[in-house]
Image (cartoon, rainbow, N blue to C red; front, side, top):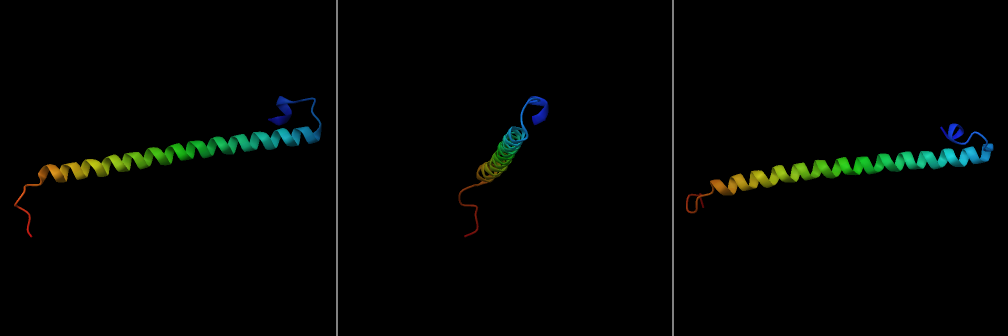
Length: 66
């Protein structure tokens, strides 16, 4: 990929470009991974909130065993 983008570059320049492309690739993967974890956490929080709201909706004062 680096050589295709820079056909006239020296080996040292190709190595620098390749390293830069590699870093960019892994940075993009890290961002996607973080976004996926965030989305999963938000879904789990929404499920927990909905369950809590259902439990509160079923609660009747005075009917709980003390």
